[in-house]
Length: 148
Image (cartoon, rainbow, N blue to C red; front, side, top):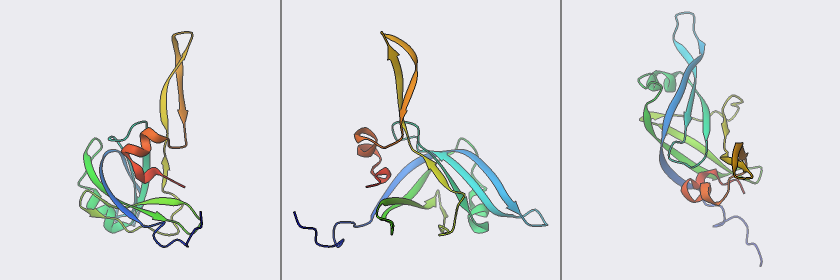
């Protein structure tokens, strides 16, 4: 099979899903108490396994997201794009009706993507085990987690 460049092979896709907000924290405030940077943590509650993401947002995003509280379920808009380093990445562009501009130098945002299940030994539940590379079940339901 001959590869013909990346045209057509790595077309970006757009996804919509719902998440549950699990934490909202002001990361930086000005001298008057206005939030300049906010960290928003949420769970991809519609995806199998345990998927968490923390996004850092600017003052405009902070002002908008402040109307939501822990436990709220809100829609998110995700763009799945081919990154310069040769793998797929997802970028959250909108949470609820709050637009988020991704900072290319952001070192605070991160995601934990894992599929966990009970660990049974001789028919007895002894704990759990997790896989940190997305597998078929997760990628079928939430394809933006695909990396390569």
